Image (tube, rainbow, N blue to C red):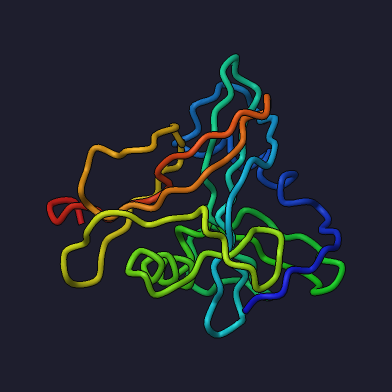
Length: 195
């Protein structure tokens, strides 16, 4: 199980994401810099214990109606070999662990392997800020065809309790800036025609 260190990172994760997020093709805002607040998320454990894995939900309050985004993150102690240039969100100095290379998790094979394991029921979602503490609010629903599933990450999150599909999907919650709770689909299994 991963140990959560309650310490500082310079720059902070939100600081790095504030400049990175508006440059992404799926960003729906119009500002050059987002005004982000951490709104939710969870962690997964790397069985090898080498890579930190976090699924962070951030809310951009720049637009008139705030927008929630899912950013899967990986934290590494060295650069990820073979990763495309756009995969690196930035580096940060962790007070306990030293320099961390922070990647957009969709480009990190360890993150995607563990997300597939979660969708198969073979990994347990963990609390975002507590060591060795399962998060029962993160749930997987639906069925999955045989074989290794293709996974679709929902970058822009919309509240929903009942997805209109029977395929396997991952549900989790977040909190809007006004304190209102929301829940929606963070990821799902791609249909065979789209895999």
